[in-house]
Image (cartoon, rainbow, N blue to C red; front, side, top):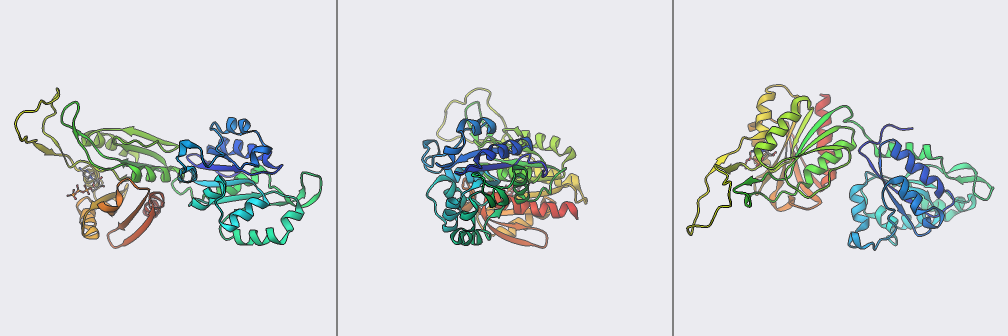
Length: 396
Ligand code: CTP
């Protein structure tokens, strides 16, 4: 059996074949190894194994309807966002044919089209179906895009013997572990800040900003999936905590600073994705402030620069690895490089205000002392690219 799956989410898709009953064992093994499993079924999969059995094992309702109203027609996209890997157990000849053609005619096929995570398929079918030139042609096409585990030679459901028997659940789980890839942050403590800070003016009003926290949460999810112990210090956002992540909710920059300082005691890296308010009101009114004149002046005082404070403490040492963010409206690389020096950090991820807020994709430049790496893609892919750099520096 492969290493721990803690912090990793697998979308387990059950298609229609007798071997579907073994998918329940695959789900069980994944969960025992620490994974979160999202159970999905094709219409024919649901004929072979009980939905209640699978949802009971996974602790989550089986999703089998592309049109489930709770996803507003975007179930495939929502699941793709959550899943670190997709496993199709068993993969039928029909599903392989549909995947080879790039069809999106049911939830599982649509998920495979929209997903950016690795897809593992465990074919199971009668040996004559497996050997049919149509299937072999599809498999040859799919080998470039998917990870195959099996089939193996042996007895199939009707007693015939040949190539077409599904791999055993343990082998399938090992293949999923391999496809999930690196656990290069195992044993490391990564601190991530995310979201806005909120500076209260009185009990009902505050100064805030447009950060949604998605980038920081993507970094936390990616670091956790790569084996790190993750502390996520988050301002007020409406996002679910990624699996395996310890979350500390804060409000103001001062609170965030305290939480970060505490977490940094044994940290290997800080990724400072939060949009920290540079100023706070000098005084917070304990009662709701009543309106008075036509204009009001709010006096603001400077907040500490939380990242620069950690940078100053680190001094000449390169440990922990420090990563800042810079949202700019112009001269992205120039400002990012200036912040690198001012804050004494290793990397600054620059993005333009026009791109970053609220979306799932982003366009950034990862700026190091002597490097500039432009990147465009999902926030999760960008998070992984940042972590690749962090891992390299941890090993340096
Ligand atoms: N940051 C911080 N503490 C602050 C302000 C910013 O730790 N009080 C961090 C942010 O989390 C980010 C980086 O510093 O990682 C850059 O933040 P940004 O606001 O873009 O830069 P500033 O240094 O505040 O400069 P300016 O607002 O003038 O561009």
